Length: 129
Image 1: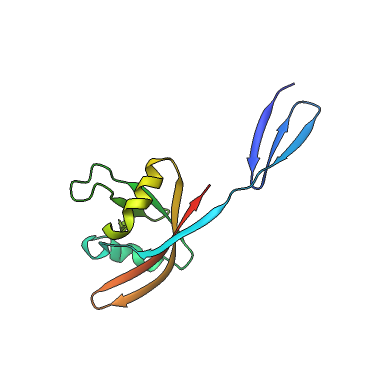
Image 2: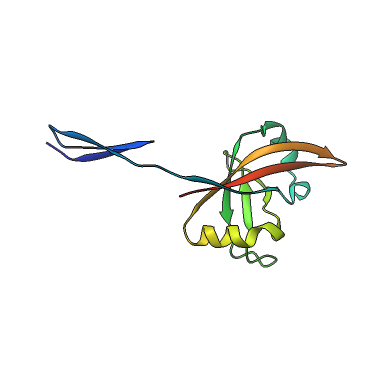
């Protein structure tokens, strides 16, 4: 006899040895803004990673609160942990505050465009609550 909890979207199963009950919950996803990844042209490995980025790919956002240039700095990484760049300084204050308050914020690749000598990667930013 034991008690356990399994979480699988969109429900949670709570059980004892002879009873299973389902608790339905929902996760709301909010679109926050569309922006681009800044600083890609300064990363030496970006040219190796960029061909692997596809529309719809999830990118992870991490706060870099010890950044001396921008106190609201947010690093953008691909799913393999490769640093892609930053959320632009003009777009990051509100996102940084949401992240600092514990909100789950992530991005998805929307588009890639070659512009001169660099690649512009547009992303959409979302919050789960």
